[in-house]
Image (cartoon, rainbow, N blue to C red):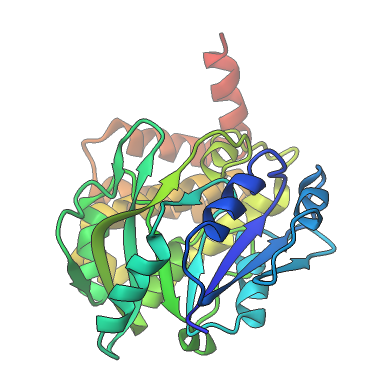
Length: 309
């Protein structure tokens, strides 16, 4: 089998049929579709159980664990040579699997991942800078990611399945920032300008929305997972990031400061903020994050209250 398409699902009852239909309608036979329900509390699981196709498998988590653990569950069950990650609110464009298969057939053994661009609902292409085929090692990935700071970086990701014997997805609610750096450090990535994914923004529980409205009174585990994730990211990649892409290093310092502040780790947050000021002394945001690290987790709630309405 060539492809295992792994789709984590959490509370996507309104979107999951669209996602599944985009895969089953590909006109390409050599794949399986692995859906992993991450303990949805809406009708997602019921909707998926109504679907039938011999290429489709449905796995379930008894408790909600996050996208990384759900992907790991799908990877463990996967049988394909390549694993494609697809979010449950997105869809593949027509002919996407054949296009990936063509690229995979020409990929040398040194390439461990194939990445492709996606189109947003408004027509925006992500990443906008990926206009020609590129091959990245650790330094190349860091430089490209740094140059793309502040822009959409969403891609359709396809990995050789045997890579996951050496590197797992993050086993927490942390996003994939550290996983991508770890992966680039171990393996080479080929990235292409082909637009193979339609990225939709009609789901209310997208990670970008969750992080923008996170509340320490309600989202403690999510906050702790992110604080741990960015702490480990900087612990393992700090020196290389600071040397190869100060811009990307600054982005991760901001995330680490915010996460540690929200988690109530004031000393840790203060240290990140001081480093950020040394890196970007002229940016007001650096000083605002330093002040927030001293106030603690309620800084975010105070800011929302002051800007409400």
